Length: 487
View 1 (cartoon, rainbow, N blue to C red):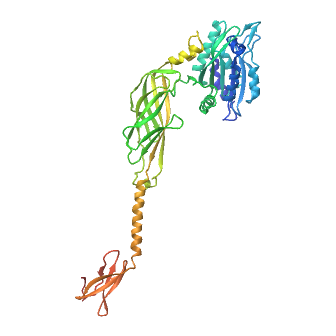
View 2 (view 1 turned 90 degrees about the vertical axis):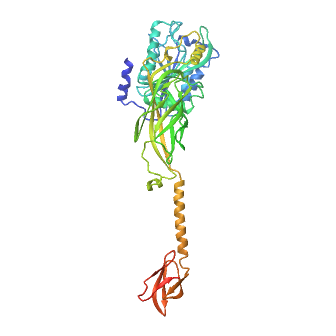
View 3 (view 1 turned 180 degrees about the vertical axis):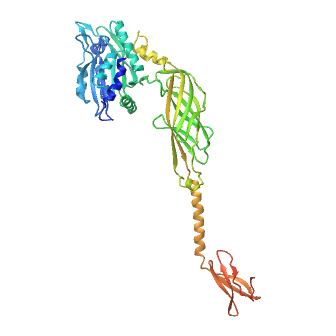
C-alpha cells in the first residue's frame, strides 16, 4: 500500500511539531450525496456539532485544518482545505462555509475516505503526527457503486491494519434529520491518531474530559485490539496479613502494600478482570501472566487460566500469584532501623496476555447502530480483524514494603529507660550510704557514695579501702596483718 511508505519517509525528514505538548488536528467534514439531510434539514445540528468538537478537541498552541471531503473527480478536487491556523472563530466560520459537493449539474459527489485521509497526511500534516477527525453519515454514496465500496474497504483496512494509524475510535451519534431527498437518524465521528505522539495526545484528551462534554457516549475502540484488553481491579489479598492491593488513581496501575514483618514470598491477589474493549465482547481467551522488575521476573500462576465470555465493562474473578522476592533489610537490623516509618518501593510491570482471543461486536452496540443507521448492515469497520488473536495488557505495578514505627518506638523506649536509669544513678552518686564492718574483730561503720571509695581506718591507720560502684561496695587493699569483713 502506498500509504505504508509515508510514515518512515516523513519521520526521517524530521517534520515533527516544535512544541511536544501541541498537536495538529484535521477536521474532515463529508459533503457528498448521502450527507444531504445534514446540510439541508432546517433543524440540522450538524455544523454546530462540528464546531463544538473543534473547540473541545483543540487547545492553544495546536494547529488545526478544516477540510471538506467527498471523492475527487475532474473539476471536483477532494479534500478541500477550508481553513488552516490556530483554533478560534475563523475555524467555526469555515465550517459554516461548507456545502454539498456537485459533480455536474445536480449530481452529488460520492465518497472516498481513504483518499481524504492520505491527502490530509501528505498535505496539511506534512507527514508529521496528528489527529484526523472524520464527520460522516457512515454510508458510501447515493449510487452505492462498486468503486466507492472498494474505496471504503480500503479505508477499513487503513483503520485496522495500517501501522502508522496508531489508534482508531468511532463515535456513533443520534441526529435525526430529513432533507429534500434523504433522511438519516444518526452520524459517525472517527478519530484517527497518526503516529505515536498523536496516540498519546488523543488518550490524554479523552482522559481530560474535555471531549466527553460534547461527545457524551463512550467511543468505540476500533484499534488497537492487541493491547490493554483488560484491567485488574483488586478485591483482596488472601494469604498475606497486613498486605493490601489497590487500584492507582489512573484507574490502571496497581499498588501492593506489604508489611515487612508479615511479608510472604508470594502474595495471592484476587481481582476483578474487566473487559476494556468497548464495543467488543471477549468470547473466550487463554490468560497468562508475567512479571518484570528489578530483582524478579518470570511467569506467574493465574487461576482460572481461561477468560469466560465478557461483555464490554463486565468482569470475572481472577487470582494472580505475585512474588515478593526482593532483598530487604531485616526490621531489627541497623539498616532496617533507618527505614522505620518509611517505605521501600519496587517498580515492576505485570503483563497479562490473552491468547486465542475471540472477539465479536456486542449485541447492545449492534442494536444501537441499527437504530442510528436503519436498513444498513453492520459497517465492516466495526468487525474485528481475524488476524488479531492475542492481546497484551501491561499494568504498572508498585510493590511498596512498609516499615512500621513500633520497633523503633520500642528501641527508643529501651534507650530512654537506660539513659534515664543512668541519669538517676548519676544523680544519686553523691549520697553516701553507711555499711557495717568488722575491722580486726571490732565493729565499725564506713560511709561511701556511689562511684567513689572510702578509707577503712583502725587506730588512726588506713587498713583497707571500701570501693563502691552502683551496687554494694567491695573491700579492697587490706593491709597485711589486718582483717576487714562485712558484718
